[in-house]
Every structure is written in structure tokens, then in C-alpha cells.
Image 1: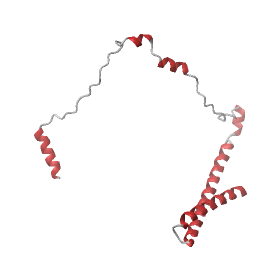
Image 2: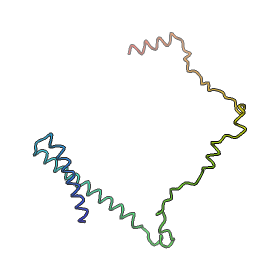
Image 3: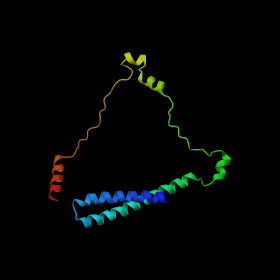
Image 4: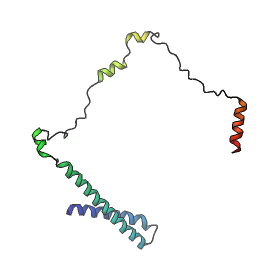
Amino acid sequence: MNGKLLLSLLFGLLGFGFTFLINYGHNLLGTSLIRGIFGFIVWFLLAFLLRWVLGFIVKQSGSPENGETASMDGSENLGSNFDISTPGEDEELINMLKQKPEQQGSGDVEDFTPLQPPKLVSMKDPEELAKAVRHLKEE
């Protein structure tokens, strides 16, 4: 507990110094000290709460809820190792990048047809469009 309190005090002093130095150039000495004290309190509480939450998380993850079933199954180390290696797929990638001999010389494999999207043209009467614009302009 003494180490937790000491670390929280150090963070509080860091918060006091930071807040005091930021405010000293713009405010009176008394105002800077008061704001520094508030900074100390906030940083101290944040450090204390952070240590408490992390300690709670570590304590819960360290002790399994049902230790008897884990030892009976032999899965005590389940999830403790993490293998991040990927299987080798180099040859598949090389084969995909290489063009096959029959595709290199012949251009008749697939005929290219460009995309022809439908045109978005209004087929309304120009007089109706002019009336709609005049109507919208009046409002």
C-alpha cells in the first residue's frame, strides 16, 4: 500500500508543478497556488484510481474462478501462449503473380467492353421545369 500511495503522491506533485507553472505566468501567485493544489488533488486521485482499477483487473485475471476444473482438464496454460506466425503462402502468391503462357500472347481470351451507364436525363417538359423553379424561387 505504501508504494501505491508514494506513486500517487509523485503523480500529484507532477500535476501540481505542471498546473502551477502553466498558471504562474498568467495569474497571481495565490491563484496559481490554489489551481496547483486542485491539480495535485485531481492528478493524485487519477493515479490512485488507475492503480486501483489495474490492480483489480490483474487480481481477477490472475485467479481463475473455478480452479478445480482447470487442473482436472489439464488446461491450466490454455491461452497463455500466443502464436502470431502465419503459414507460408509464398508459392501461391508467386503463382498468382505469374501469368500463364496461354494468357501472355493471346488477346482473344475475353473481349473488353467498356461500361456504358444509363444517362440520367430528365424527360420532363421545359415549361414544367420552369414553373417548378419559379415556384421554389417564390418561397
